[in-house]
Length: 89
Image 1 (tube, helix red, strand yellow):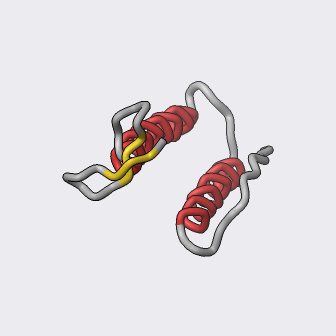
Image 2 (image 1 turned 135 degrees about the horizontal axis):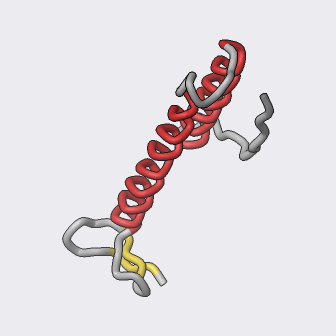
């Protein structure tokens, strides 16, 4: 059940005690941190001493990540977006 928080004016979830805004901020920060960590883990594949890859591989990975960032923008704006996870080298 949602009720309006008198201080912020935002709707508050009675079960968690958080407003919708506070819940969004908490989830967005955690998920963004996790996404950044995942990207940094992918970047570790850039070690030429440990891995063999081509410039085409790098372009495919970067393109897939950019495509998902574009989908994120679209979904969070009025243009909508879809949830598809499809990637192959």
